[in-house]
Image (cartoon, rainbow, N blue to C red):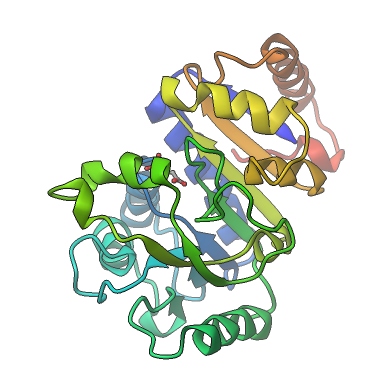
Length: 271
Ligand code: PGA
């Protein structure tokens, strides 16, 4: 995993958006995996700016969101459909026909989850998957104990997640107890993964998933087995990493090499 430690949330958002911009420029018809939550809001703001000021073109891109709450219609102001429209889709030139978010109102949930997996396959698989991380180590809604080979399915939310997400609802009881979510196995099939995390409340879990054992207790730790993962953290989220100095050193060395002409592919970071 490549670990990039940034100064704060704005820098984190700008680095993450540049990685996504690089993907779209390299392959305009990219299949992007998208995430919701507080963390990616700044990244989406920056992508909107890139679209408006630099003409970053989303018209050929296809998107798949990670998850959706069970029982919330797309019009509900806490649904992830609504979140994505508000925070990204309404502000860029994405083709609505190429947007995919699991349907929290699906009548036959198992069939819908299977259908979602098939759509991902049909689109050629996900090129770049954006992820946040829950304070309990989940990616998407793959709560502790989720199978590390899991596919898109219905999950019961952990109590910690309900508490964490209560800030978006009028009261904790309003937070749905279930969600449709891509599985860990689904996420692991993305060609490249970009995980972002900020804030002190993510420090312990970031140390666990980056430097601890691979375990279903912290489903993000599975990313250690993926060949192409970039983790972008702010200093608070990185504050419990034992090897933080080493990750910084690696980035400095790469920066030095970037200053000289090089064909080494891993040095090709976004401009
Ligand atoms: P957050 O959620 O960005 O709101 O902290 C992250 C997650 O639960 O994946």
